[in-house]
Image (cartoon, rainbow, N blue to C red):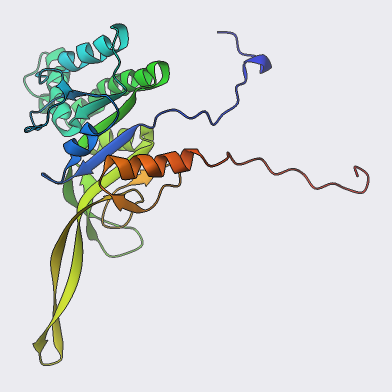
Length: 265
């Protein structure tokens, strides 16, 4: 393709966001994704329970995942959302493929860290397929992942624990870079301080039963969004859709115009 000034396009086109949703087991990640418009599930684990949604058979190899994405791209359908459930279970399939390519039985057999670097090629291919579906068929990707509590060594504070996406650090870095939205799903917790005597209080957490979706990163968890979405909303597709629609309805920022000078007035 020849590149010239005539090929310049105006930015800011509203495409469906690439969303990563992580959280603990049973919080409702799969249920949230099932409420998206016309979803189809590409499963790498069987965690749908009794949900009645369209789904490919559970993938048992990376090639199964590749074939499912190819089918969505090449065959006629009316799906508007593709849900990967889950990234955390997709990762071992990619590792197995990397090992098979090298005639090894385990990704660790390739030498210290080498297999995980090679796995990035497959992650990039997978994300390329997701982005192609988004760009060419207007399909929104929702990528579900499990969370894990990990010690974070901050350069500016004492170390602390935080919820991260359960992926190898190299795959996580790639996913963090490419995702437009990373949401962390968690239960709402209230802290109650009980008087235990001797002028001392003991803190305990009480669950309210409400599920929340955090969309802005905090020390306790990874989250992000590119759309100035609210920091926290209820974990429901309606609340998320309303917030995203409100963000998309905002006028695009205009570049600052240079101030007029006396000569140019």
